[in-house]
Every structure is written in C-alpha cells, then in structure tokens.
Length: 302
Ligand code: 13P
Ligand code: SF4
Image (cartoon, rainbow, N blue to C red; front, side):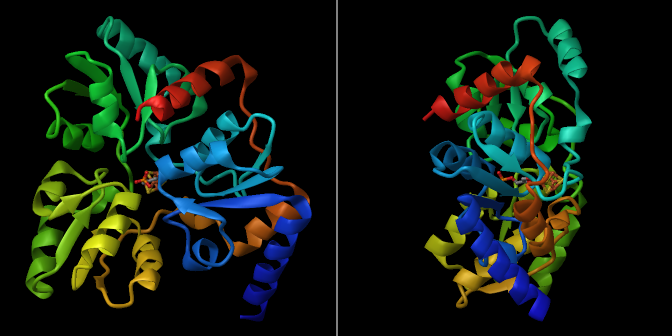
C-alpha cells in the first residue's frame, strides 16, 4: 500500500513538473483510471482528445497502437508508452503486404481499417474506424462494398447493421473471442434479470445472445443512463471495475477476460516513463503522412 501511495504521489508531481497528461483506456486498472489519468475513454475518445491536448508530454496508458495514434495526431509532442510490449492480437494479425494483396484481389474496393492496427497498416488503408463509429464510417463512403479489416467479428457484427457488403479479414481479439453463447445462457440462468452488454469484438453468436452491443464508452454510457439493476459487460475485466466505481447502485456480474497487453501498464511503469522519458513513440517518416490521413479522415466523419 505504501509503495502504491508513493507511486501515485510521484506521478501527480511528475505530471506538473513535465507538463504531462495521462490518457487512459477503459481497460486500465482503477488505480490508473481513477487515480492518475487526465483523459479516459474508448479508442475513439482517446484519438479525439489527443488532438485537443495542451501539454508537452502525453503518456498513453493503453496499448501500442493507441500511442501511435496519439503521436500521429501530435507530431510535435513527446508521446510515451510505459511498456513497448503492450501490443494487440488484432494489430498483429495483418501487415501492409496483406493489404496490398487484398487490394489486388478486390480492385477499387476501399479499405476501412480498425484503429487496432500498426501505423504502417493505417498508412496502407483509406480510412480508419473504431468500434464506436464503424457503421457510420462504412456508410460515409457511399459505395456498395468495402474491405473491413482486420477484425472478422467486428465486420460481421457491423454487417448486421448496414446494407453495404463487408469483406472481412481473419483477425480476432484474443480477449473477446473467448466468450461463447453458452456463457451468456449460463449467466442468465445463474443471475436472473441480468442485462448483458457485449463488445462488438465478441463473436456474432455472442452478440446475438446479448441485450446490447457497443464500444467500451457506449457500454459505460448505457450503464450510466439506463441504470440496469444487474449488468454484465462481456469485455475486459477492468472495464466493470471502473464503471462500478461510478455506479455503486448497479450490481455487476463479472465473468470477464483479462487483456495481457493492457495489464502490462502499471503505476510503477507510468512513474518510470515520466521520470526517465521512456519509451518514446516514433513513427517511420515514410508512412507518417499516409497513416495520419487515414486517422484524420475518420475524425472528419461526424
Ligand atoms: P474500444 O474502447 O474502442 O471499444 O475498443 C476496445 C478494445 O479492445 C481496445 O483495445
Ligand atoms: Fe487488443 Fe483485444 Fe487487448 Fe483490445 S482487448 S488491446 S483488441 S487484444
């Protein structure tokens, strides 16, 4: 507890000293999310807020692709990620070479890339999307068919909400792919009346068994606005911990899966990032402009 307190105090002091802000994803542990973060949210909110940040240093408490997006939008600022090994199974599932092959196989079909990808993959794409704006981005292009990569399940879940034909890739989130429709049915038996919210990275059969689906921010808003008596968020474990702290009147049923990448970030390595200016995120200059264009096109869709 003493060490925890010490790190917390040191981080608050270092933020002032270095004119730094901490952006934290909804999957960060409560001591980070509620203890030291300045800006919290889903991938879309973190990208949007990154543009508005007035600071010299941004520490991204999240995974590597989020830090790259923050750097793309803030080329003149120092962007730090406390652990460079905080990756993502979706980002690892596709390369720019794969996109070149997809374009050859589907000439003229635009490529919409989920933000959970490397900057190099974003650079090879036409526009980005997140789980919070995917349907809107698909429909903004005004074409009958799009490539939607790399999350197969996100593409299949979005396909249920649009007439645009979506061609998917075979990437999966290693956290959300673990949920099954049987889990949902068993939970409904064990916890009568539970409202089940599923992240759209879950398999479509799981989303079909849920009451509602949306990005992490949309799930959080749902709990705040609808105040279900008993709720289960089919997503990463810290999400329920963070939302539950704001809504003590809601009962959280917590079958969840941990993201090992998100969990690499700790108070200790956030403190060290600020103390030693590490690990600075850089983007290959050869791809920076194209990658930024894909993110900015997404942010321009209202
Ligand atoms: P959102 O927070 O954008 O819903 O994404 C979830 C996720 O898995 C990010 O890695
Ligand atoms: Fe990637 Fe899934 Fe972890 Fe999100 S929860 S960072 S999509 S592996």
